Image (cartoon, rainbow, N blue to C red):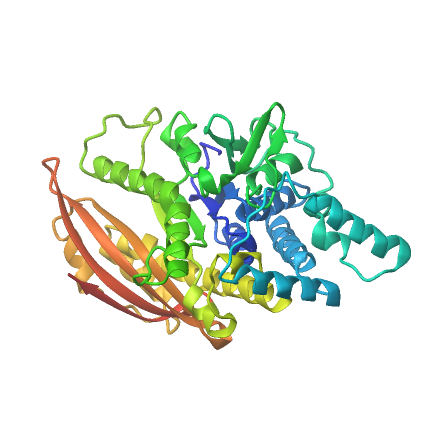
Length: 456
């Protein structure tokens, strides 16, 4: 991170979730390209499991040759190419994928150790028979994740590189310690990606050096803390964290045994992420209340805005049925394409709302707020939001946080964004006055068509 650069520093964190991580691929391609066009500075990427695959593919494209805008387009194309090669495209693959989904949903659960069954050698043999004898079987890209990663990232050799920081989450099987493989330490290679994606029910622990690792779903999903803990000064930390989240935060009460298990898995996958983001928001409030000492270049702390772009499972379920844990192994072409397309559409709807939060809600200057509104709304007219203007009446510092963001995509790039907001107003005596409410935006292609903001 360049401490002399006054652009808004952004890091993007990609949650894992098997094939559902194709959602991250779609969103990441749009967001990376937009950071270059909008004057933001991409400080880092992180990911776990399938999110680690997405983050690594994008990082490898960004740290190659070419200007950032060109590299952003290259990253988006690489992400799409990878996931579409990983999808079940041919008859044998479609059949295997279908039966995997059927058997996975049977009421009887069969468990076997990946150390007892030579699954990968059997799949490799099937691919070789196809290649050498022309027999029916899977493409190499469908069964060999290592080979597919090496194909799309041929220069990935563990060297330290300039550019955005990359962190990949995993957990040490023997010690239980969280591990974030870091590009700064020259730790990013195919082995590190496979370690982050080594789901123990399916794969043997991945050896990296002398240590054995499992999927980062058991540690940081995805890594966030290190972006803030490692820099010595506030100037070296990002201004914003954008989380691409696979597992939903909220759900109706589960009743059946399978629904209970599904919800338990979702909560477990979000546990470490929620803890890390909650601590960031607590520090933001301490800063606003003046409880953290220090200012100027040597200060270690600054407010960091957090945004979650959450996959809209309910919208996908309208076409593909329940998105249960078995669906995270679904690699049908239609499903992968739908996940990528929803990620792209959600990212495009998120961007103008994020600008509204930053340039209107978080801006203490009323004239600047009106000017920002005029630029954000499609008709160019200035819009007033008296509910928010009231927060600045005393001239006190205001911190605004958003959460529970629900993005629903419609045809033609149009869609709605609903969110919960909370505002903390410093009273000048070390205390905070808190207000909250909800908001709903209708947006299309970078512009906001309408907005309704409610307090209380």
